[in-house]
Image (cartoon, rainbow, N blue to C red; front, side, top):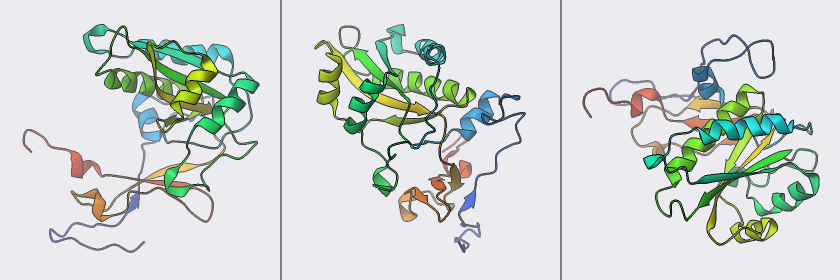
Length: 230
C-alpha cells in the first residue's frame, strides 16, 4: 500500500508491526516467550486445529484468571469450562464470529474451537462495575493460553439467554463473555494504522489477504502515548 506524508511531514503508510525476537514461540515448545512478547504476539484466532486441550491446562487458565486484579478485591467472577463435544456443539451456534468479514471469518466444521471458557458474574457479589474485573481475568486467560501454544477469541456478541438455558444458570449469575480456545489453525498479524490522531479516517476493519492471513490494524504507539503532558 502506497503512503503519504501528513502536514507534519510524518510518513502515514500502513506498516506491519515488528516484534522483538523471542527465545521461542508457541509453535516451538522448546522456548518460552516472556510476558511482553506474549502481549505483542497475541491476536484473535477464529479457526483451530481439532486437537484436544488437556483439562489440566484449561484449569491452569482459570487459576491465572482468579488472581487477576479486582476492584475492592470482590472477585465477582466464576468460570465454566466447556470441553465436552456435545456441549461444544450446543454452544457454537450461540456465538457471533468476525463481524467485519462474515461469513469468511466463521470457523467451518473441522475448524471450530475445541474448548470454551464462559466468564460469569455473581450479582450477589457485584452488580455494577464488574466489567473491568472480568476484562483483567480474560486477559490473564488469553496470555496464559498463548504461553501454552493455545489461541483464543474473546467474544461478547453472544445469545445470552440460550446459553443460560443450556447451563441452567441461577438468576443471580450474569454471562459476561465467552473465550473460544484451540491450537491455531490460521495466521493473524497486526499492522500499524497510518499516523493519525483519529483512526476513523483510516479503516480499522480487519481483513484477510489472498493467502488467507488475517490483518488487524492497530493504532501506533506514538499516536496514543503522552508523557508528562497531553
